[in-house]
Amino acid sequence: MGLLLLLGIFALCVTIGVPVAFGLAIAAIATFAYEGLPLLIGFKRIVSGISVFSLLAIPFFIFAGELMLRGGIATRLINLAAAAVGWMRGGLGVVNVASSMLFGGISGSAVADVSALGSLLIPVMKRKGFGADYAVNVTVTSSIAGIVIPPSHNMILYVVAAGGGISVERMFLAGFLPGFIMCLCLAVAAYWVAARRNYPKESFPGFTALLATAIAAVPGLFTAVIIVGGALSGVFTVTESGAFGVIYALLITVLAYRSLSFKDFCAAVGQSVRTTAMVMILVGSATAFAYLLALYRVPDQLTSMLLYISDNPIIILIILNVMLLVLGMIMDMAALILICTPIFLPVVKSFGMDPVQFGIILMMNLGLGLCTPPVGACLFVGCAIGNVPIDKAVRTIWPFYLAILVALAIVTFVPDASLALPDWWARTMDP
Amino acid sequence: MSSFANAIRQLDRLLTPLAKLVAVLSGLCLVFLVFSFGWLVFGRYVLNATPTWVEQVALLLVVTIAFLSTATNAREGVNLSVDIVPLMLPWHRRRWLLAFIDLTLAGFGLLMAVKGYDLTVFAWSTKVPLINVPEGLRNLPLAVGGGLLALFCSVNAGKRFTEGETPPSGEIDAPVKGLE
Image (tube, rainbow over all chains, first blue to last red; front, top):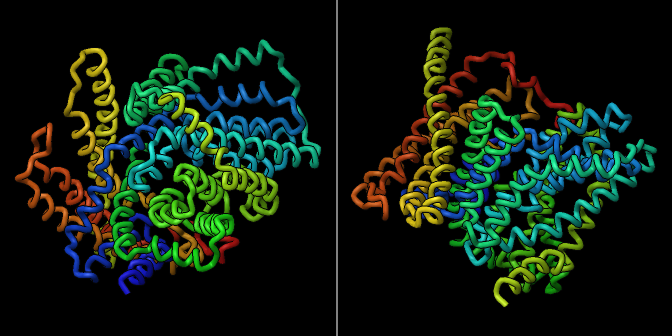
């Protein structure tokens, strides 16, 4: 009955539009009251869920992303991608994917990726004769790279939600190859659609121009190198790397690029604080919620239920992928990471899957949810920028969904796609 | 009704500088957080004396940012939510649902404030290690944020009641196309 109350109140709150974080908190506190547990423990769980050292990296990643977003880095990355791959058929589509791979690796946010690159690339693509739906679709789907390619604050959320035992560094390394595979699949889809629609290609600007754009983009790209490299080398903790990433981004955008005004800086601080609060309150509420899920032994029950359906790991993985995809369609990513991880992780572990591999699968599934109606933040932002009705964009998005699903299948059924790099790193660091 | 509407408008105007103050305070916390970690690394590698206060202060600051900004986020309506059902309703119905949500949040904020206060008092005599300040400070943002949430959301609900049948700027007169 308690579990029913917990899930029922949460479902009701979310359905009528109560913010997800409060839906979780209200459901948890009501269930604490129903079970006769002291409410103080419930609220203490919320506070202690936020007061976790490894979570401190999240505001830094968000802040660094905001500074890069407002500090002119996106333009330089697009120039680099345009010089490198713009000469292909439908070159701007492939440029869009490549830019997402570069920018996503820095910002770590899919929505930031769509707003930054979309506002620059979608109008240009439309002007050059590309369909508005194509421009929106390629921008929206390639933005998932921001979640999978490190640094990504969603990976930290996953590590925290997993309750220890996974290192952020391992997650970061695990994201590189799947992110690259996904972008490669998307680039193929972008090329294929462009070829079918006979979209134009740009001329190759020459190796000198390519080198010049690369040199201009390198200082911005170095932000990701500082954050990921600092953490991997052991010189900094992940949190310290995040703080250094912010300081570096500030120095680059103010001193080198001279493109960040004080007004932009204040706007970046304001937006970072808003986003940080949204994520942190979700983490706190989900901690109280997850405490009750564990109390009701939900992960054990789910494992038994899935074992009842099949004991074939492949079938179980397909079922989990479908469940995550459906959940991703209707709820926000951060909330789902925090809710699903404590439930699904014990299940996949019992089937012998590495938690790091599952983390990447989770990111890709929920990332795809950001591009699907009815709740798809990236899709909505992309359609707003491209001035395309959502239903029109969705009608022609399937080649891109298919590309992501192919990448997802590779990551799901080939563990080395995500584990080869972290395993190699572990062997190198500790021979 | 018009005197109620006037009172709500006045109250909302009074709360605007308070919300700005909270936003500025949260922003300063974030900037301090960044530079304190810069100082931590500088102290460890250059001065060879790690400032041990940084981590504990950072945890207090992040809790402060989370609860204070959650209240201002609720005032601005920018917390993450699933808006399919509200957007399926025409504005004259949706505003009642939004008022109900605001009142729910206000009620929860009040509970947060009361329980946050209890937790603060309960843990006041214990000290946070390394910085020697009361442990209760960690729970204080819960109480303050809860109070602000109750205040902001009550006024938001009042605004919904007094807004009338025309959607205010920023709201669309749904049902949104494709969702009805």
